[in-house]
Length: 287
Image: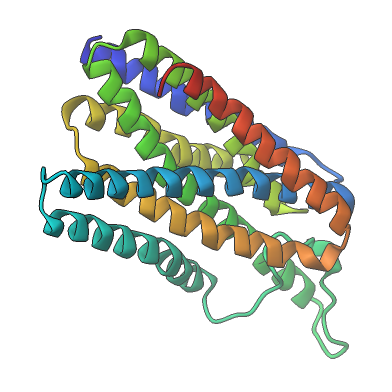
């Protein structure tokens, strides 16, 4: 498979994330629907977390096996583990620091909360409800974009797999990978807009979120076609794992105020199982 064909197929796999993003434009969602969508996205993210951390651990485990068989040094194993630790920590604390800076010094309501529930103090002037609603919207959109960044890190590593298989001439495997990752990206679009709650994003915001989350699939395919690097793949798996874990905590905290715990648990299960089902397509191809 040529480089141009690999680039085109990587772009197709990344573009599929836009199939789930228009859901964020729906109006008049009640609390049950908000909780359901948010917890469904948590289930998807939980699967992504399991997927990326297991892949990262596999790279380190393979290096340890190689050392045990006297094919590599212990320093190589230690270096990969240090890379895993640094990447995962940066994924958690780095995303937290970025989001904290975006929020500024104000303390608006929890991300994903409905702007309609904001009640200004009795002494507030007339413009304060609008200011509070604007700040709540901004925070929810920042959280959604944080999810897109975390998913983008994950998708870069997936793109690497597409590029490597295409370079090796495994056209059938590359095709199945693209189909499987395309299905993944579609569900990840739900994961981005689900926690927005009552905030209705603009088409421009959805386009940017899709580029941030889906574009790395295309970039990863280009890099994977040219370079094969376990440390690079491990770094992006570790960053994605840390970022996804942070985002899961943020969504969970944001949705607690709405109740509907049983519904939330069912939707987490549904999201997780959908992630497993789409991953089986990739496994069927031998990835």
